[in-house]
Amino acid sequence: MDDITRVLEGLGGIAPRLETLYKDLHAHPELSFAETRTAGIVADGLKQLGFTVTEGVGRTGVVGVLSNGEGPRVLLRADFDALPMEERTGLPYASTAAGVMHACGHDMHVTCLLGALELLAGARDAWSGTVVAVFQPAEELGEGARAMVEDGLFETVGVPDVVLGQHVAPVPAGVIGCRPGPAMAGGDTLHVRMFGRGGHGSRPETTVDPVVMAASTVMRLQTVVSREIAGSETAVVTVGAINAGTKDNIIPDEAELKLNVRSFTPEVRTTVLDAIARIVRAEAAASGADREPEIEPIASFPVLVNDAAAVDRTLGALRAQFGDAAVIDPGVVTGSEDVGYLASASGAPLCFWFFGGIDPAVFGAAAQAGTLAKDVPSNHSPLFAPVVGPTVDAGVRAMTAAALAWLGAGGPATG
Ligand code: ZN
Ligand code: ZN
Image (cartoon, rainbow, N blue to C red; front, side, top):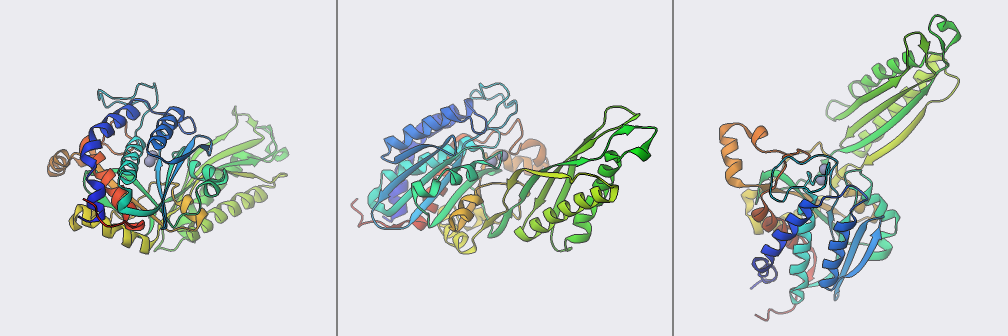
C-alpha cells in the first residue's frame, strides 16, 4: 500500500464527524476579524490532533504546527470568515446569525483542512516533515493574510517550502480547477478626496468647483485602460461612487470618488494605480485647486500568481486522486483572494486550486437544460449551498494528496 492510500484509509471513519462539523460552522457564521467561535473550534481540534497551537495571530487567526522528523515544511491554508448577507437557502443547517452567511464556502475550507490534518496526524509513519496549518481570518476584506504576516506568522511557524490552499467553487464535486501563473485578479479599492473652494452658485469665478473637477477626473480615468494598457492585457477601472454638494446654488468645498480596480499582473496593476494618481493630481491642478487631492488605499488583494513548478507537482498528485479528466484549467478568474500574500511574504511558491461543491447530478441536469446560471448559485449568492458529503470528501482528499506531494516519504508500510 502506498503512502497516500495509507493516509486516506481513515477518511471513511471521520467523514460523518466532518459533516456534522461543517453544518455547525455553516449555522454559526462570523464576520471578518470576529471569527472567535470558529477560531476556538479550530484551536481545540488542532490541540486534540497534537499540533502546537498559537491563537490570535493577526487578531483572530489560528496556526498549528505538527513536526514529524526531517523534511519539507508545508503550509496548508484555510480562510474562515463569512459575509454580511442574509442566507436564503432554506437548509436545515442555515445560518442562525441574522445578516451573516457563509456564502463563500469558507466553512467548507475549514472542515476539509481539519479533515486532512486529522488524516495526516493519524498516519505519521506515512510521511515526514512539518505540517503548518494556517486558519486565516478576514479574507473577504483582503486583510487577513497580511494581518497574520505582520503579526509574526513566519516567526511563529517558520518559513514554509510551499503554500497550498483551496477554494470551493460552483462546479461538480470531484472536479479540480487550477492554472499556473496569474490565476485570480488583483483588486484595489481607493477613496479619493478632491478639494476645491466653495462659494455661491451664482459666482463661480470666486470658487474652485470640485464638482467639475471630479466630473472631469471620472471621464479622464476612462482613458487609463483604453489608452495606457496594451490590447493583449486587461484591467478594470470603475468609479463606483461620486459624492459632492448639498444644494443647487452652493458650490461645495470638496468631492469624493470611490474607485475599484482589477488587474492580473503586478506590472499592469502598477501602471493603472500610477495613472490614477497622476490623473487625479493633474485634474486638481488643471482646476486650480489650492490643495493636493488625497488618495487613500482602502483595500488591496494581490494578484494570485500560482508557481508553475508547484502547480505541476501538486496537480500530479490531484490527477492521480481524481483522474486526468477531472482536473481542468478554469482560465483566469476575475474574483480576488489574498492567499498569495502568504507566499509572496515568505518567498515560498504557491499552488491554489478550486474544488467543486455542486452535486454532479444537479449540475449535469442544469447544464443539459441550459439553465446553469440560474440553477447553480455561485459563491456570494444568498442561495450558495455546496452539497455536503461529496464536497467534504473531495476537499479532504485534495488537501491531503497535495500535502503528501510535498512532504517527505514515510517509513516502511506496517500494514
Ligand atoms: Zn468570497
Ligand atoms: Zn472565498
